Figure 1 (cartoon, rainbow, N blue to C red):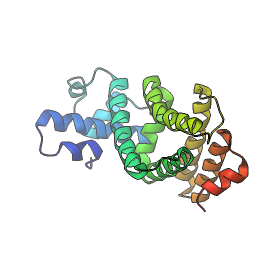
Figure 2: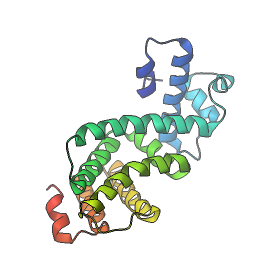
Figure 3: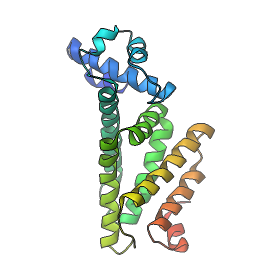
Length: 204
């Protein structure tokens, strides 16, 4: 199996760390091919070129490895988004920037998309941690009087669903910036902006 995100990060480390990373990268590849629900431990060990017993030297079960893979990728993506948004105070611009970059990253990194979207669906604690970042920007927007909404889990569910639509559509049909622009506009309107104001904030 080719090296991936986790193996690149542990290159030069001890055998245990490199084996664990190989399993994590294999899990990402299997989820990308089969989805989280259908992925099996035997699929992961086969993809990594390791024995089934080796898996249990590192992880207790499938959920544990999927959770670690999802958090590892999310950490990388959030790091990129934070760098992109450094110095941006306007909450509406932050939401548009984060959404645009998030969709761009995941449509370029198809395996990551499968793990992050699957993790949001399957792992409640992972979903709640993702929501923390989104909630913070929306609450900032409410304080800045940019947004006129009550920040609820249902609202966050709707926004994440829209972002998921943008990612999945472009994974299937190829990158299409217009889809991302439409989703950004829909999110801003969902947050209480008028269509005219939302249109001005979404880059052409």
